[in-house]
Length: 177
Ligand code: IMP
Ligand code: MG
Image (cartoon, rainbow, N blue to C red; front, side):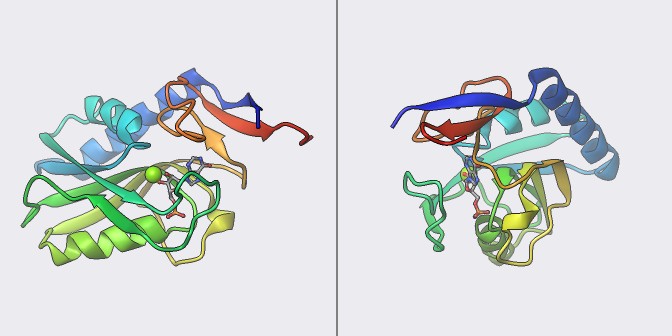
């Protein structure tokens, strides 16, 4: 099925907000070091831009999970496809996500990283769809709250497409209004 994309959050607004989040994190972690753990593939674009705006020492790692399997609805179970490369023992970790939907992915990863001995864990997400939450999870840092619409761009995909859009767009399937 073909689809069209409309702009939800333009590029300049996304960039300004990412800069603010970086400044806020830099203030909160003054005098400490941060381990950013990005969730592939969606959060990779956001994490690179965010890391460039953080002024305290940063190291990075990535994990990959799956729950969507090519659909626009979560299947409910989170599976680890790629584990951490580096130990997070005694590290101050910020898990970086593109978007929090049901909250299952971050809730699962928070517990997982806690079991690996992180000193502290916080959640940073570019987008949040609070209406969709099924588990109790609140991000410590959140770029934008958005309505329940399927979005793409800035790392996020629809069937692996549109990750490279520099703005956040909404997907409209053909036949929809
Ligand atoms: P959760 O576990 O239900 O919170 O799902 C979070 C994951 O679902 C995110 O990391 C995204 O990869 C994916 N996701 C949720 N909503 C969207 C969307 O609107 N566009 C693209 N990916 C999404
Ligand atoms: Mg994701």
